[in-house]
Length: 318
Image (tube, one colour):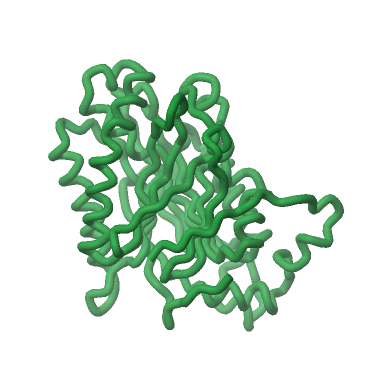
């Protein structure tokens, strides 16, 4: 599979997104317009971020618009799912207006008899596709009743975009190597890892997973978390984390260039509501994989028990 890369690196905006107690739809719309407008307005010569990444379950703040959603977990899931058509129309409008890619904050989405955790991905044209979460945490499975993508016949998707080949691993998915490996084998250069964790332990599990996936697959991984306290919410009352851009630690000048020793290319202030901006150049992935200090992407297949990888559906999103 091939994709057209920009001649120069593009700017990514990775959200540390607060869960607010919204008073009405107008408050949500104003907040989202402000966040997207700020990110799209960054950069030199009036060129802002080309890719905006929001976190897992950031959409749960919409439950505040429903009285029962502020006190009952099941009601909060339903309230947010019911609003998704309106939410997605707004994201599509903003993607078109600013000419950007937006990974919207994931949300519970009712599909038949199931709720899935769905991250919707919007192109500058306003076109939309999505990735449903594959692996459920104990909280999702045992308390929320959220189902894995496989329950509705879904699986992994690789998005062929104007920015490169992008895969999405939602929070816990980042902790399972075969998922990201399947995306990388299918051609992914960039992995988006939206997350929602209620402790630093959880944040570090996802971050360690994200950095390990960047190392194994010699690619970029962007992690976007929810942050702050929302005591009114039965679903996302405590949120910890920091946004980051990770790559493979590579000291070889031809491949690593300015790579830091820990592979952390950008990192936000833990707990702060903010955008973290970082430059992403997909062409570097080919350099890492072709002439890096080590070649983990190439050598994956020769390790004992490499096994069979999950199937990946390729979706063109322009």
